[in-house]
Amino acid sequence: MATTGTATGRLGHTTADEDVSQRLLDSAAQLSYDPAVEIDWDAPLSPDHYGLNPEWSTLYGTRLWREMTHEQRITLTRHEVCSIMSTGIWFEMILQQMVLRDQYLKNHANAEFRFALTEIADECRHSIMFARACEKMGVPAYIPNRPVAEAARAFKTLAAGELAYGGILVAEEVLDVMQRDWMRGEDVLPIVRGTSRIHVVEESRHMKFARQEIRERLRGAGPVRRHNSALGTAIAAAVILSSMVNKQVYAAAGLNVERAVAEVKANPHRKAMMRTSSAHLIHFLGEAGLLTRPAVRIYQKLHMI
Image (cartoon, rainbow, N blue to C red; front, side, top):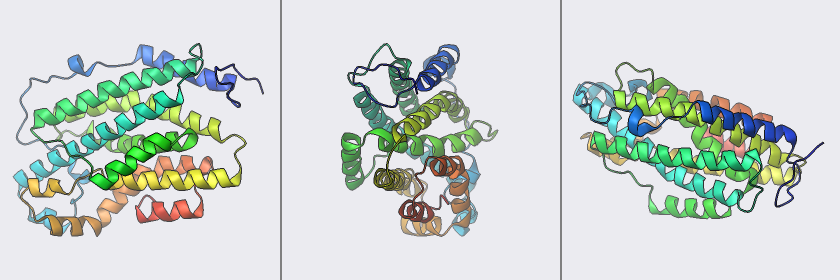
């Protein structure tokens, strides 16, 4: 199989890989957005619009949801979407460091190198966009707890190859499905619909890039490496998904936090929505050989399967 030259002499990088990266570069040149001008940041927020489709609220379908006032539901969904955006900012910062480290001293004549930097530039804009949206909604930053933050610090420092791109894909795939609904939600704030539309369009390229990188890194990988990568990706998924909605969003809506958390954990609708948002990811991981038994058990506990 023909290979393209790289500064590190990495084996397995093919002309087909270069073709994928070049197509992604062409797409980025034709279809990219500047959130600073694409979104009307000065428009007032309608008091009757949700932060996300009610069906995506963690409490939707529970007894507590039925007891809540319309105003509480509005407040909760706005805090939930900003918690998810905050998690997005946190993980995009991790992603940027992993991609930049992966491309260190690579051949900058390759399309793969140029698209990797294009992705980093996209992620910078996305983080600024999410931060600005949360500020507009008057919602504070929701930061992961200390143990999770330190675990992520170790992950971004040590993860490489398919494990790094697997973690990236988990965060992007799950959020993508959610945002495809948010961008169409007529009862969702226009600012959320706009940021979701931009993110969906540009992240579709990032997901293709991550899938291609995973396939490339796993060519010729033995069973031990696949087992370790599968388990590591599943653990990363557990950390990411458990951090998406901070429990303090319930306090912000005037709810009893302990009761809210308990109802979320037992909520069958929430579990079904998690399986829906994970379907494409799980299918790809199966194709890539990253659905080992230990990994599947973790995904089942997360209600992704």
